[in-house]
Amino acid sequence: MKLIQAMAVAGAVMLAVMPVQAQQDYPNAPIHIVCGFAPGSTADLSARVVGAKMGQILGQQIIVESRLGAASSIAGAAVARAPKDGYTLYVGSAANLINAAMSSSSNLNFDFVKDFTPVTLLTSTPTVLVMHPDAGVKNVKELIALAKAKPDTLSFGSSGVASSTHLALELFKSLAQVKIIHVPYSGSPPVVTDLLAGRLQGFFAPASSVMEHVKTGKLIALAVTESKRSVIFPELPTMIEAGVPEFESVLWFGIVAPAGTPKPIIDKLSKAANEALKSDEVINALKTQSTATIGGSPEDFGRYIAAEAKRWVTVVNGAGLKK
Image (tube, rainbow, N blue to C red):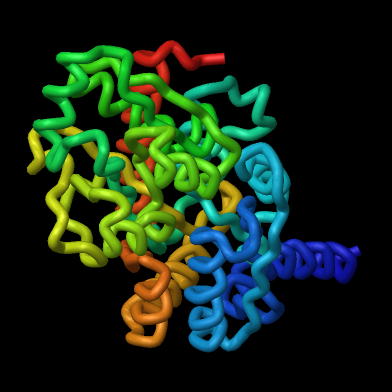
């Protein structure tokens, strides 16, 4: 009987120790990062470029998987239910917080803030306010003056209803107190096509989709939408500098893990991500895609997510977009 009791106690001790040992041995198998955006997108490239370097640092392969649908929410719901062991991660973005502001968590099947633990904010891509030359404006103040003088005559495209490019427009309309017609499209390319043809006057565009046209003079760039000058386009003023206080709209991407993933694993992943983000190899590879590296601690990323969630709830409610 004593032997059986001793064996039972030993077994209980082993069960208690195994998770700790697994954390210490982490990672001892390939890590999967699930991305809800298409291969070749900024989110996908960020995960692949940073993930490849992280894999070298951690000594394990990092595999990026695409799982498309519902503005990345299908991928998010799948990873939220994944084991909390650090082997299945997710590329979070502003789209998650916009989706949450638009719909209840029951519609999304997960709550981005509650169901995930931040690891590291990876990258951001500047959004640039561009105009067709025929609009006759050369800076943001002139745009605001024109929009107020002729309400509901200017047309701005977006990559879709409730997309980040649409919400940037709604934020601008609210802060500048102007009336502009919103024309939604199914992605950025058709917006750029119609903007170049003069069928639209403006677009809060992902930089990578328009800057070549700005260089050739076919479009005019007025400002970037980040709160600080972009390291990619330092010559452009921010919207705040251009006369719209409190304006900030960033296309950002970061790694998150299912909530409950042990802190030692989160810290190990974050350390590897930050080391990768500081490497010239990663910085230069992403810069060619008009993408800047960021980094920071899990706590930094958590605070950033909280601020972004508050911002987009305010914008969505103000624009009457809540479903």
